[in-house]
Picture 1: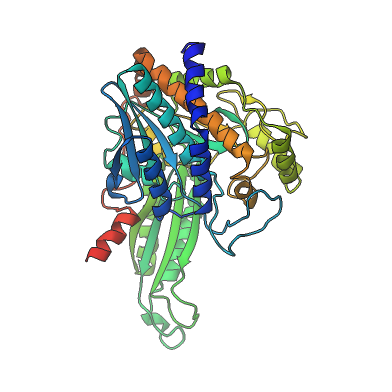
Picture 2: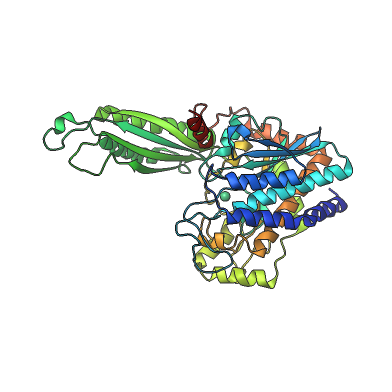
Length: 479
Ligand SMILES: [Zn+2]
């Protein structure tokens, strides 16, 4: 892209900044959880309508998912947004002390109020640019619910909603701006329900078959397996049903929930298979039966070198976000509530030398950087297995702020958050326009995509028989 095209798309972003600052603030004000984002989704629909997008509701049968499209013919560029919040993180905005608005209430502890609004901001500028220049090509905003443990994009992939998309672009709030090092783990969350037979634990223990024993033996089995699995894999569990609170009754039922994570989808699916065998072994040992049910699952992120380079070029052209003294003063107040270790590790995670007294991300972190720290999982990963995908980080909060913290919620409506969101929107829109103006870039991204996957079959971590909870609820209410 020439400098002229770039500054034109940045101007288009700036022209509508108030619309998207306000949208982000409204979403912050109505924090809604996984698959319950009805009002947040409606707010995105209203802006899509106002901006003249063609709207598809109930995407993939999920009532809180929406897609808006603009433009004609040509390639399809998808910009992905999210708007779900987290439980227990209610917090007042603009203060550097923990102060819940509603005790035990929800809060935007991952900055998804900015994520959805910033992506829609970028999509709108791309739409305006295409219209102004009569360029063939389509831009879509996908309002994706339930990223926090809901794997909604996995359901959306399964429903084929990205099948005709050429390139997917997204971002996530962070302390620094830069192109993601595409590391995220593939995961599956799965319940194991054991059923046995109750009996009086003293009078007739020989008649009982304990489901809780089976859970304990399963956990022992998995803990022995740890030595014989890839060191990058992670297995966590929580006993979600112990079968009762009375020790003098043999527990007839018990449930343990496993979260299995690995470097990539095939490795994760191999581990899942082994964990299932251990569950069957535990059932065999205890003469109980076991039934498993997948709750959610994400594929790992598949990187894309041409797209990452293109996005990084756009970042370099724009430069790091500019924050004023007031922004820095508030971020410095937030930093006072953090440890020096929090702040130092935040730099290291992005491949930067730690510097104290730097409240907000003032540099673009280098591509492919980072200390190799394993991160969690994201459902963007599942999209990246079916469409060449690129993601960036936008600098929206104080360096050192932990994810999913009250400090992160407190900064969600700050002017620095708006500026960081707008900065990310400019880079995403610039990247999208570059792709639409030079189709060879799209071809290069697709070639890289094919090469990386090298024929590895995609097995969606969401099995065919699992329904998204929103759809399930609707079915029940109709029945
Ligand atoms: Zn997030």
